Length: 216
Image (cartoon, rainbow, N blue to C red; front, side, top):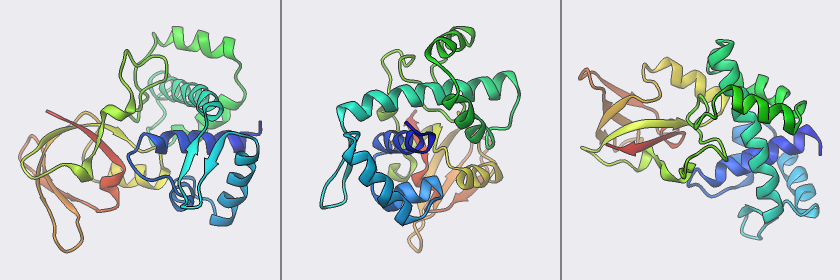
């Protein structure tokens, strides 16, 4: 399988756990590719039995697709852990490097890497590493956009998208931060939150669909 096809399968897998309908538009947005490119690749993946694509534009992995994509996501997230913790790469640059490494790694190397890293549960973006999750999956998280006023939540996962990661690093919050929901602005649905030090900040309506939290 080509690295490009593998990247599509990883993206569909991750969207499966993001509580959003998986569409051509969402895949295009996350992968920064054109809509026609997504359509062409999806047709190929359907023909090869990795995904189904309904007339209502609902995209789902088949059992065959889940088996392959879980392995790809595991490999990708292990390399992200290594790059971030051991080589000190910044969190917004590890995705592309991990993409290159995962495609050139065999099962034996990844098993040894997993053991070397002491079987980490989450990648630097907070995603559960398949097989290491100790019973947890990404479905245990909720979208920040679904949090309600006065909820106290902890940021546990963020989407692995370069443009979003650049934005996230600029708004002075981090993974594992605990915040209180103040309000959703009526005008544009941006979200006002309060940090533990009582400072408030506003997060864009698009970004709150890229941040995942757990109630505290």
